[in-house]
Length: 309
Image (cartoon, rainbow, N blue to C red; front, side, top):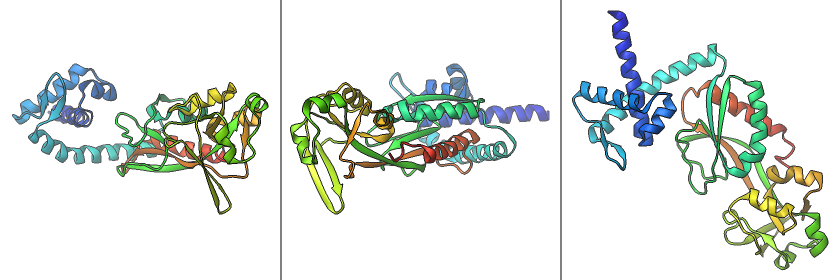
């Protein structure tokens, strides 16, 4: 009898988790992938909840899934209970277990494809029981973690619902390939950039202006050229091919500058600087895998030679 009651309560708890996740994602498929079950099982769990409560919790159409008014009230009440239970589980796991499971990471393309990939390699060697899934996606003004455990963000626009740990200040430098400089000459002063082919980042330098600071003096230069792109990686490749001058972060071009593939210009001037953060959901007890990754990344970045070139 006791076993039957416990099984019923566990089934109910699993159904609540499915309902809460569907409410957050508006998707049965995303919920199934996140919870490691089939889509039909998620649908069955929610139907069982509706049958037991004798009330419709979700409105389903071919276009979308959303909570009914009753479902909204029910999710708000149950979310607190489920979160407290999950917090208790995480607190115990943090004390007694080794980090394991799937770790889903969201990161900008240029940062994730170069700097972060090296960190993930070392992290994977240290924690072999954590399976990493890295998704690279550029975002401009907003970010929502959604199905991810952690996200990396370059810039200061951070939702208040997320916890942030600052990794380092990303310094940007003007650089060019030796072949370009041999053909067109090296600019002596930032104002000379107006006569050069400058590879403009369409988001970071949307107004086509590069700002330079030396002591208390500030110089703003209107730049233009081709190609332009919304990707630092694309601009780096163009710079390496000798197509022009680019303003790029040192975490992306640090190795190129040290090897001589790119040459840094105006080293006596300060240019763009943007913070790099690691973000995760606000919870009392973050999963051990998340805490281990965040702590590792903070330590890794402190020792990195490219955080400040």
